[in-house]
Structures are given as structure tokens and as C-alpha cells.
Length: 115
Length: 113
Image (cartoon, rainbow over all chains, first blue to last red; front, side):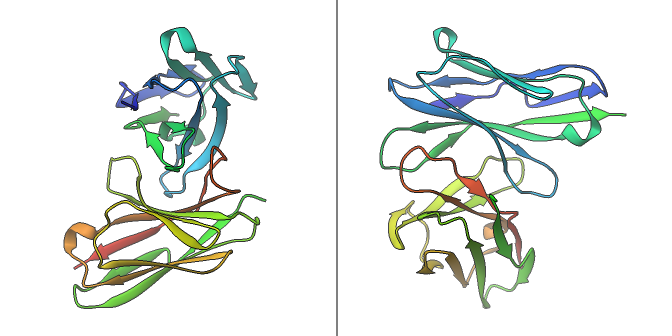
């Protein structure tokens, strides 16, 4: 079974705080891809990162960083020094290497950054 | 440029109306997707077109009819919808099949009265 769990439904932080969004996935595949998308109130899903199952290097992009650990099936996302513009729903997704094209989304984490 | 455009942004229609949603991309992507997203839920895949041919229909009711006139355009024709079809409809595209990243448009917010 393929499944993505984002246990944090909603997180509220004060601006400039660091915040980590958790993502745990289940798959029996050895090859797969993981994604993070941001959905601001406007509705568009904005692609943030793609990571394949063979690349466990952590990644940093500005204030964003991602920690991929196959041993715990987790792909967590940290925002450093959060800003009000980071307020959005964040989705973690799993993509199998098959012809289904399907992105298996987690339920999303709503992040509210208060000024 | 990773832009996918969708029109209209908002649509209100009655249950007897016929309307269409439009999606366009100029990234040379050969796979295009329709998703439906209800409030506080993740997107759900509806249809996939690959090289302008319908390759996946996720058991979507026939009142939703997709069309891919060319490699840059994707339409979703709506007819005799129900109030429960009210949702955000998202279009996405990717370079091809497989693991390529799907890039999403801003969506059309549909309200069925």
C-alpha cells in the first residue's frame, strides 16, 4: 500500500520562528519520488522540491531545508526564520515509478505564521 | 518558465448549464492532468492525457468530459453537474509520463447551484 501521512493538521508560529513539517510515507517500492508542494490561499500548488529514493542528501534552498531519511520513511521540511508569506497549506506527495501518473498526497499541513 | 494558466478563475453554474474549463501550457510538456480538490482535502486525480491521448480516467462521472485539442491545451467540459461537484479544479502538466514534476495552474473555483 502507498500512503503519505502528515500528522500535523495545523501549525501556528510567530514570525521568525523555525518550523518543521513532518511527512511519513509508506511504500514497498525501492524506486520512488517524493515531492513537497505549497498551496497559498490563492489555490495554486507551487512545486518546492522533488527527491528520488536513491538520493538521501539533505537539501537547502534559502530558508527552506529538507531532511530525507529512508530508515524512518520520512521526508521532513523545515522553514527557518518563518515569514507571514509562508502561511499556506503544505502537501507532501509520493510518486511511484509506474504508469499510473498518480501523486499520492498527504492530507496537508496548514501553516499560519503570525506577525 | 513553469507557467500553467487556467480560465476562468471562478465559475458559478446551475445544474442544467453546460460550461467548459480551459488550461494552457507552453512548456512543451506532453502530459496534462485534471485534478479536483474539495475544501481542506488534497487534490484528487481525475484525468491524464499523454501525448494528446486520454491515458487515465479515474472513474470520473460522465458529466465531466475532458478534451485535449493539442499538446498545449486541455479542456474540461461540464454538463448537468451536481452541487457536490463544487470544488477547486486544478490543471497540471509534466514533461512526459513517469516521475517528472507536475506543475500546477492556479485553478478554477467552481460553484454549482
